[in-house]
Length: 183
Image (cartoon, rainbow, N blue to C red; front, side, top):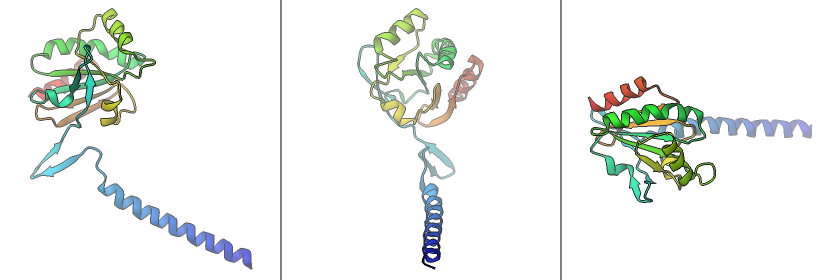
């Protein structure tokens, strides 16, 4: 008899916890907005999260420094095969659109597999000339919740995220995204 009561009590407690978790999740997930989208009249503003990285000279550079022009931010690493595959396309289009679009090629510099000197050698030996930045403290990757690379974020001249692309892109696909920013 005691075992039946104990079993019934445990079952009721678990049922209450499950129902509470379900409703709690429903309420909280409705309020959570990872894209920071806020409705303004009939338009949506998706403000780009700012971050700080370092240039080749060790100077701090903020994403917001480039607002006023469209910005293409690519998160990559030299050990990432898909990243290496798309780097020439970014290099070509950074040269082609460099007057009208800012490119931020953000290396996920962890100090072990990716070091500033190692990446400088990698970029030089591959003849890449795109604007290179180092995410030494993880500020940029945290701001964009980078969990897989390559990840490319397309930001309009007003500082709003227009598109994100996770994975490798062909030069034509990248060009399409860039042209949508410059229209």
